[in-house]
Image (cartoon, rainbow, N blue to C red; front, side, top):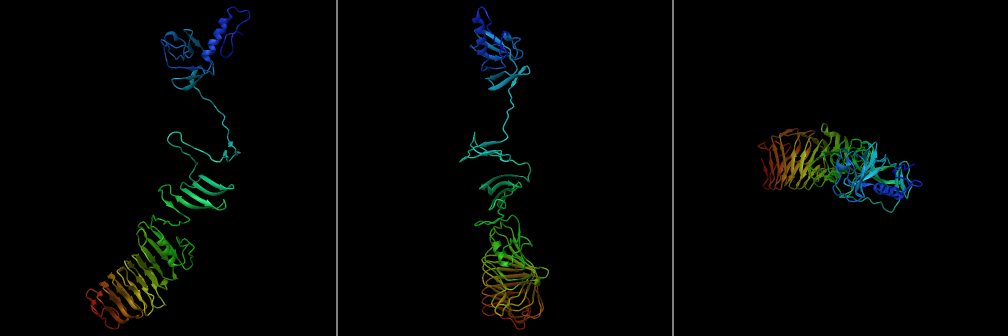
Length: 465
């Protein structure tokens, strides 16, 4: 053989004359082709003043001294263009493109390689079929190249999981991510098998819920809410369904007071049965009305054995219940300062001889929105001091001739305004008492209109009209 197989470098043959010529030719070829880096592959005509050692890949259609040398490597050596025909697999770094090209299938093309990548990597740890990347180190750093850095955890379907799991002794204790849905979950576990959702972020609205409850933070409503109360209930329930009711009305009132209602209303739905009353000492946070609702078809099916107390600006509507209180000196409805109370269909049963069905002694407003029944007596059915009770076109139905000291009382500037009322049935006792500038306005009804067995009175500046 006269030349090497790969670079076609000439051999020095035995007894060859001028051996240095052959040797220098081989050295020149090595200088041109070893660590091959060409200036360009798109220059179509030889540069006028090339520097020594300049190399180019000759493109198709080259002219001048490069004519007919397409795809060869042209090297300016010893004042001449020397052309080297490439062989399959040669690599060349094209400087003006900062790219690596390979000669394959008769032409130069961007180099590409098939690299075998291991299916698992362990760094100071053993990777396995599930944990294909395992790292044991005091810390692991992911930093930016450019403006920022993202760690991406992808899943195939909405029902799959993409999350970060935090463990103690290889047992899960906390997890955050898309766990079984596209909502963002943060959940915790005491044993690694049973997890409780602490926080869930809705993927469509961004709204946050706290399924396990929160401390020192009010849950904010996004719609009206109903709490259920039943005699079969338990105050350990959440009260949110008829199947998980609270046991007491007060528990439901207290839960409503813990909410940020954001303008939405809260209804307390009482199942048929007997219950103690409750106190709503303030309005709902964030606005909204508190509805206390029993059986609006048959109010006698839901009985309160002690009173309802409203104070400090509470906004409430009560309907569908019967009030019947055996203990003396406990009013059926006690209405305090700034309260707005609306009454629906009710039944007032007997209360103690020193108690009233409806009692108010501070500025407030009580509105009778529906007809109701009076089946038991009291000291006074309505007793308004400094507040205002209004009704229009309402019917009061009395059964069994209940007894009152006075059916309606207005005092201390309080007023009762009954527009076009209707009375059905009878009662015993005084019809009314308007005293200390209290006003009872029936819009012209006779002094004998209100139920009772004795005449009404108007001492100390009281007015009946």
